[in-house]
Length: 381
Image (cartoon, rainbow, N blue to C red):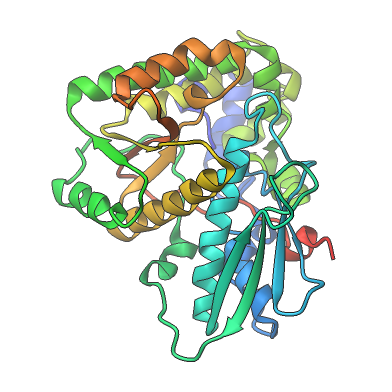
């Protein structure tokens, strides 16, 4: 993530602007560390365990705040037991871990694709030890060798999948792409709606912006994001998770003392305003929105939502369509209740339904992959 140049130049003093100008002339300054994104190359060629090979791909799944809150137990032969890493939750903005479980659904879908690529069928028993709560497993996944198993055509898109957080191009969503996404999703039992008419997009954009502003102006919810911001190449390399801030301008801001966690929490500072400008620029460029609903909100349904969503994003990737989730207005903490209800009405979702995913979609350049931790860091046994 990089701050808009106009914000940077507007606020900083002359001496720092000169430094920033020099930094901008060196494009690799404060670049994404290669170690932080090595996982996007897939499993180690020397790895022979099909479970570990499949896991290497599953770890590329989308997930809230890039927390990568997956934990896996390989102690049983031919089996993966998937847990939630309870040290990587979002208690302020995701108090019921609904988003976290959706991220686990994304993980399980890519795991199944990757296992098939290795010649294995997977059977996932959800919540095998009873209803989920911290400490109980999300799934027990059995691997069975199956010669000739079909390769999922979306699997090829896994290393190409990106979540574009910056601005989109001005062009409208291609009707053929819209139709293809709706058709591809039809196999899911979860309703999907895509809208691209200007009036609907404007209304939904306003709600999305209001949700982001509310979260940023509430210290306890904003801090939950700031706590996982990794500023600069060194922090990114040391953590390989969270929200990455990097590049020449970030380098200059850090060296000027203008980019700190404390300042990012303080309205009116360059760090706080730059973050807000960046989010607002993304929404301003949106030309289409979409959402996925469900008739209930069980833990099993949350997993199903994740599986359907990642397939949608992979299908979008194949078409060259960018997609970014907007979670703020769907979050279940008390202060967001009114906006969440308004979003529910504006999307036309039935009163009994749960809005599970809301996202913008359009076209954008490749922002590059996000950091991923080493496979060994996810192992519990």
